[in-house]
Image (cartoon, rainbow, N blue to C red; front, top):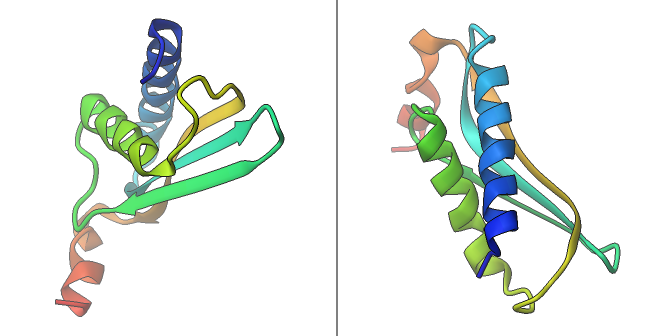
Amino acid sequence: MLSEHGNRKWRFDAAHTWAASRKESRIARTVVLKLKTSEFKTLTRSHTAGFSTCSCEELTNIALSLLQPVGLRPHQRFRLVGVGLSNFCDPEDGHAQSALFT
């Protein structure tokens, strides 16, 4: 369970990432979560959807859902937490890649 401070930090990171992504003409289909623990262990998780993330709230929810399967100790401390986007494509090609694998 995230502390209130941790929850605010996640939401701030997601909002910052979302604002930066709005400056791009291309859209991202993959949400990336990167964690570095106080023991210097690095964990990276990602989720690629068949469509682009359409809101800051959706980006935040996907990032938080990626935290669930990590299986960390209840009071795990982090020295770095990052929420990012990748797998950029042009808006008109947003669904083209997923159609190849259906």
